[in-house]
Length: 285
Image (cartoon, rainbow, N blue to C red; front, side):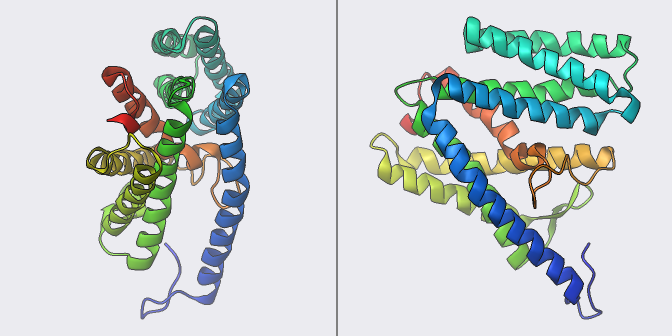
């Protein structure tokens, strides 16, 4: 909680820290957003390798987050091995086979972690689910020539604007906390702002994509915002459990990769599953 005066106003040092964090967030976003758009636009093997690299960093951060210092090396080896095996199957065979392989590696990795005497081996399975499944979902969506590019851009933009809307509304309006025991900074106003941010993206894509219909995208946008915020809260709960503020320090103003993609981790698998079941892009619903 930020320091403040008796009348509730922030002290100068607290306000300065907030301003500095905001500048770091903006600068990081200005660097990361164009790089992400370029990678998505290129697609193909470059995209797959890029996603694998990002997932590798996520696995590395999970290893530090869920294990004791003496266990980190062994935990990271198990996580990265599961990631590489699943990705290899996805590339050589097809992505659904990679997903099935990832599902099999979860219990196997937990058993291996237990044999290696890693403290809390069940968290190894949680880390694999939170890393491999979102990564493969993204690769599968982008691999579709007909709708992959715009679909991936839509989903990632929806989650990004959910974060922006939630941050802006939460800081501006404040109000009742969403789940204070899990994340003291999350508010109901922030959730509403996140929904508005996601709906804004839906409106833009309704205008630029001939198959997109607002009647389908607006409720989908709300669902994406809720699922993204749930992912944010889940990661906050994990960090609180392990008494860690950030998953890493790679991205100034954001912490680690896990801190930046927590909403994507829950949204991507859900959207990919919905597309697989319906046989169409969410932009064609």
